[in-house]
Length: 206
Image (tube, rainbow, N blue to C red; front, side):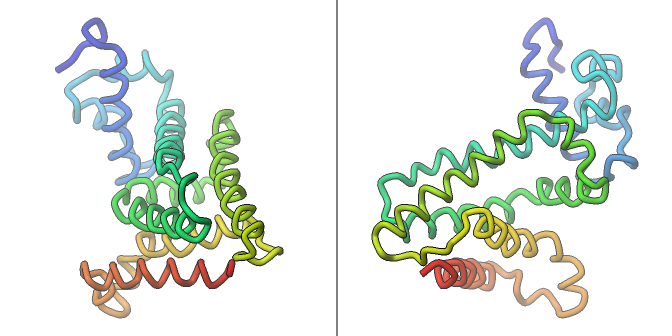
């Protein structure tokens, strides 16, 4: 067990990781701070020292989740690619990221249940979110300048469409499988769906 005196930032990160799993599994109301503490063999007092209270911890988890996905988008380094290839890479990344980070999807679903009232208190999220739209705007402008993309493409609407197709794949997997079987969730089927999502988005902009 690490202590705050040995490595305070690592302890903070451990708490956030444990809290992410707990909130994603049980929601804000169902999660217990004691269970989070037990996951990493620390104390509730230590958690409150870092985050103030349960709501503060939950907001920190949300902030980290969104910052992480935006940081990974920025690290894609799309500037050297053609507009079509850049958009393809971004869609592939979003599909893969959401599939590989089910906890992120669950956290977004939970915060929607709470009408995003906790997100409104996180000042950094507006700048974080704007970065995603700015990235798409650059791709769209390059595509229009090259005569490849339609002139009426909205980066905001395009972000919505990419998110919707990638989000549903994870958010509705359980109920979709219950209703229709899990044939779309094998590795091969997921690879085919991923390519279909890419082609759908490219069809929208071309």
